Amino acid sequence: EQMIASVGDVVASFYGEVSDDVFSSTTGLWQVEQLAVTGIINGAIGATMIKASQGKFDGLMLGSPLKDWWREQGADLAFKFGGMVRTGITNGKTNQVLAAELVGMMDAKRTTAKALVSTGIASVTGAARDDLYQSNSDLIGGYIHTSTLDFRTTNGCKVRDGKSWTLDKNPIGHDIPFAQTPLHVNCRSILRPKIKSWADLGIDLPEISKDT
Picture 1 (tube, rainbow, N blue to C red):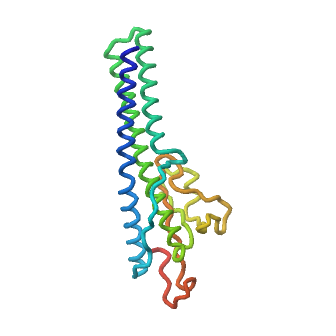
Picture 2: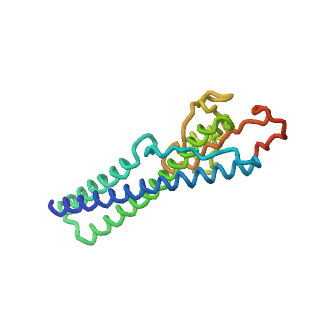
Picture 3: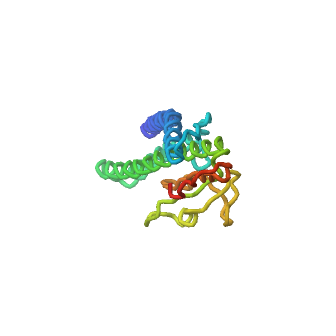
């Protein structure tokens, strides 16, 4: 039991450090995403009209603090490790068998960690886009949901692909409620800006292609 407790402490410390490292990188990622999106939009317009916002990441991933996701993973690994060791001893398993089971457990956790990193990045970039759109409401009129469509796409993402919402997050021409991306772990959907037309802005110029 002392060994299990010691491993639990090491695991908790490790996941705590990972959580801190991941969260500390969100500011830079936020800024990079905003600069990238402003560059794309301004390039399409042909003028510097969209500006980066002054906001920052709220630390949430799928409605829960990003740090809590990592803390939970650490607690789950320590819990499963303890259960595996106790069961192994009770059932007379050899060290070789226990070692093989531990490798399998760590492989599964590695896959989960990759999913958390991917979803965490999507949460930061999605929030950065949302803040950018809201802060440029004079030029951006809403959101357009864009999903990556393949055999991995969830039904929830499929049905939203191409749908639009106002900046007040009201649906346009449908009744599907607004939802910030990512919608789930490993979600690849994004919300593109619905740029106001030149006519909406009172400017007499040829309209920008909707495919831009």
